[in-house]
Length: 172
Image 1 (cartoon, rainbow, N blue to C red):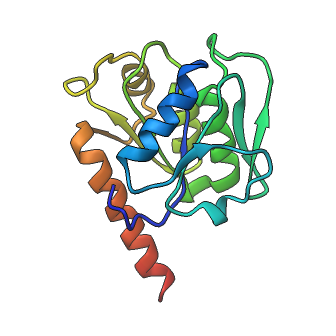
Image 2: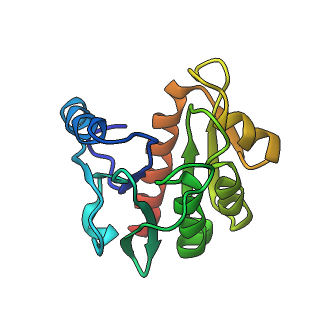
Image 3: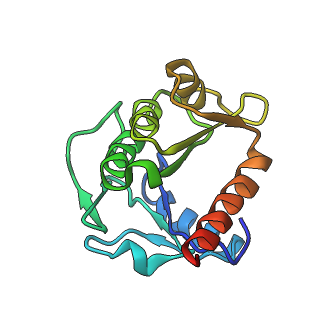
């Protein structure tokens, strides 16, 4: 994604401590986008262009324009869970939502991606050829949850194009 990407990015990784903090710090140094763990109550609109990463052992949900951390039950043996985040995004943003499901083992994220698609949002899954593990994206494709199935290298430019069109439309 270009450094000028204006929208906040919510990120869920199945990663535990002590690796989570080290990964967030490493990722922060690899991208022009600020990468930091989500904090309960953060206003999403104040985090434009930033990567809001789910902290280990907490689900991230979006409600009332804010990020909320919960210690609810694991989903698919995962906490944080992509499904939990995506379901909240579908409720909060409906047709304005955009979600991507990338490489990973298991099925977490597939049903949440389907919820976003049913709400009218744009859904993207990584293709098999560029996935290290084609588990989660495959499950999404099998459910019909992914409107687009793209190679990893095409996902960033696709998101940037969507953000540019949304920005232009908002300027009238």
